[in-house]
Length: 349
Ligand SMILES: Nc1ncnc2c1ncn2[C@@H]1O[C@H](COP(=O)(O)OP(=O)(O)OP(=O)(O)O)[C@@H](O)[C@H]1O
Ligand SMILES: [Mg+2]
Image (cartoon, rainbow, N blue to C red):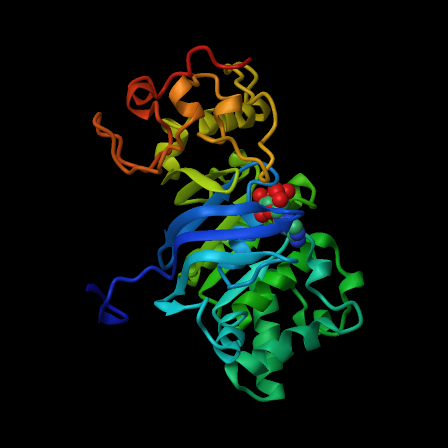
């Protein structure tokens, strides 16, 4: 039980809790394992970043948080709980109520979520009326005030506009307004700013961060760029080939990255910030998910690989004998953590 002034004594429960999740895509006679035994929990009000290279399973994991899988994908194991409700066993009615009303998703390209032939007002008020059971006039009032909250100065004009009349950044603001206006408690933002210029990107991320903080919403922020999420996340989970290989508070992760892959990612991210730091880009490319190596999936690219890494998969373990306090999936963690502030010796350059 936990106590807070607004809710009194309540059971301490993560807003979303994923346990041993596995998502597969059929591929010829085999399967591609896009999400491979992933467990993670996001707390109420927390911002969790999920980072990893293209194809590492971030989007599939994000969608599965709403019990959705793209294309011919199938969830073949594990569980997803939203405030204790098992979403993989939930009926359609419960899922419709939770999607949008409790969990909102913002994608990279808002035009895919917005209907080009409906006004912004209509696209906001329909879900508001569905999720909040209010009439037309009240829905319009909520829509306008949400648009104002995300930075539209003349919301009553904006509701009459159509998506193509807005810039990319403004469309993302509309998506954020939609999440807020329906009362979502968790926003999943899947590379929401990748398609925007750097200044707009920062504005949209700042808006997401300040709104979620103000409204005590949880935020799952997905990015392939560790540098971008650095300033926003409370915690960061690093994905590689469908698995989480390290999960830590943002502060710990940036100060003392432990997994060789995380160190490599930070090496690449630092490149844009300062040229003086030692560069440590990751050589090679991620494995084919159809034919994963027998051991650690990162082994073929790892600068500190040992024979053991090639035939046994390292588990994500929370503590190492040297006192490492956060989960890392690396056979060499205990010895490497001792020099965590320094680049991995023998690192690829
Ligand atoms: N619709 C689909 N059909 C078949 N396979 C898919 C589909 N979507 C994803 N996959 C498989 O799942 C893997 C993970 O895809 P996912 O989209 O989650 O990657 P990602 O980390 O989001 O990458 P990106 O940074 O490019 O968005 C892919 O490598 C691919 O093998
Ligand atoms: Mg993706």
